[in-house]
View 1: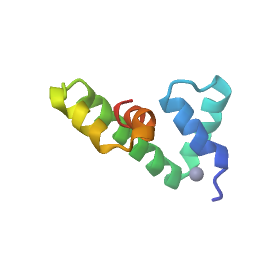
View 2: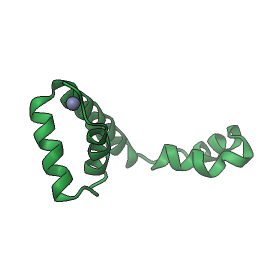
View 3: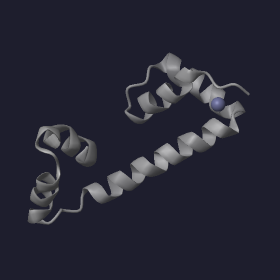
View 4: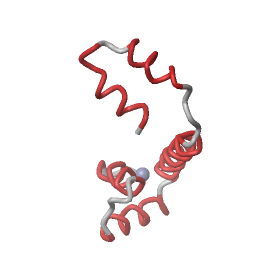
Length: 85
Ligand SMILES: [Zn+2]
């Protein structure tokens, strides 16, 4: 089965809780028929659950500073956003 490209996009919209009812309907309909996308969606959800389950753990005070120190200066902002979102 050929997967529509927007299905992956809908998965991200869904996980960001920004999906419209219409997109969600399409996503669900596709997932019912597509094992490959089910697996992909499952992996995405697992990754997000992992990030959420560890996000309440306080990083040591020096952790952020040492991460920052390792980043090239101009990439501080994007790097931190990517890791701590
Ligand atoms: Zn698919």
